[in-house]
Image 1 (cartoon, helix red, strand yellow):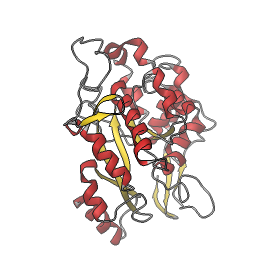
Image 2 (spheres, one colour; image 1 turned 180 degrees about the horizontal axis):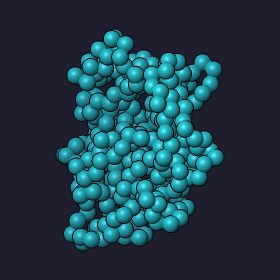
Image 3 (cartoon, one colour; image 1 turned 180 degrees about the vertical axis):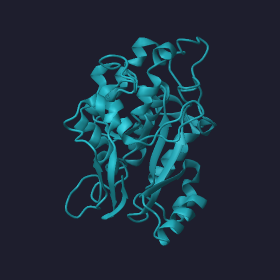
Length: 319
């Protein structure tokens, strides 16, 4: 792709100061397979071997797919994305197999990592079903399926993460942004399963954090990981509301939140042996902060500054 060409050009010019992990589209899996692109393809600077798809919409415009209608609109359940169609065949007791699942089975068989966007509880539930079918059809293996956002989960579905190495690729700042109107959209009970960081963690999902920047047509999301850490450990808006946090039992500790951004994110891309923690033999990608995150009040995390960035053992930024 044109983007990959740009990244390689920057690397060859010595101007690339971030490690890149690109993802193709799920319906491009055949082209990737023909090029020999699988999990781990590439090098320490630019990797690929993952495909992305979208199963439903977003909360911001009420297109995330739910089992029951939205609380503020009794006629709206959200949408299925076009890649779900056509529905193809009978499938293991579930009514129909989607085109998405048809493609996913083939890509998974070819050794390509899958990542799929899911927001609503029906979208996430469908992908958990699909994961079971991948295991049944293609066998158990270290696939590290990336469930992107895992934003609203039914209570009975959390246990389905156990023992499957599923990556819950979540963006904690979404919680800070969306909590202001979430209960109006889906009600109090369903909101208990929204941005449920603690329950996901304790259920056996590998929780990794990111920003989702730049965002959607409904919201814009900052890159700054300090804001994500703040959201994960406080579950409050940037002005400290609500007091004590929104569904505070779903907060993570600061140690867990840091791990989600670092080691768990490296694990999600099959790179935990070379990055994600400071250890002999690993890549020297390090930031020095203005404050010790383990000692300051959680309310102060959002104000912490980056003093120095070290990339591949070289200082590339100093405040």
